[in-house]
Length: 135
Image 1 (spheres, rainbow, N blue to C red):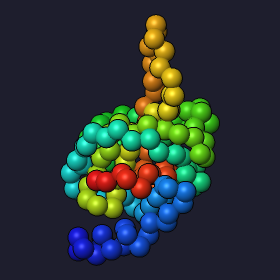
Image 2: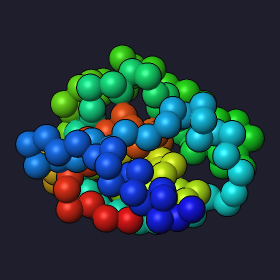
Image 3: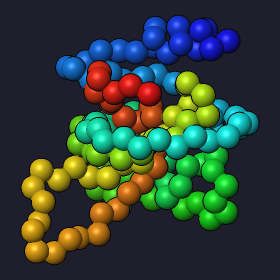
Image 4: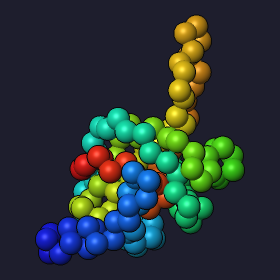
């Protein structure tokens, strides 16, 4: 089964300007999966993909044990297609269903005041990941 999932994942990848868009099932399909979530640290810059509005921005992973998961609109977040984001963490239940914790990419850091950076969890299909990103 694991080899089949790898094959499906590999054949679903589409290369576009140095980034890889991974086609996976919808959030609704993933939310019904059973299994433990595994969290991993990351430090990757990605972009918001073209089908981002089909997926929700949340304060926690949908399948997590948190009781009060809040959803934020894409408009309110200020994120749209092509926006660069930083991935600092991802969560998975296997090879195919991944969520990523993202925040807006800032090219320059402020030296005197540190603004609060809003972080969101989003399903992987909403992002265009760099080719070099490995699990």
